[in-house]
Length: 65
Image 1 (cartoon, rainbow, N blue to C red):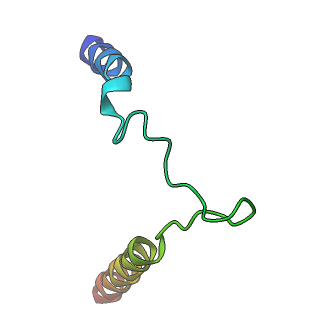
Image 2 (image 1 turned 135 degrees about the vertical axis):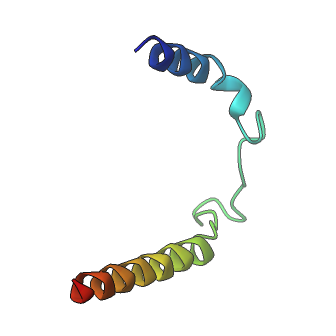
């Protein structure tokens, strides 16, 4: 329990140091009404493909038993 509390305290203390780009403010839109473009397609598709592969593997293992 003590090691968990120590680890949690270290994570909480180092939160401000772990910012990827401190002070950058992020991307700015080209027009005032346009939303900023965030590339989510690549990561989401890889996670989805990994989930499908994992699910197929689990089904294959379940059928063997």
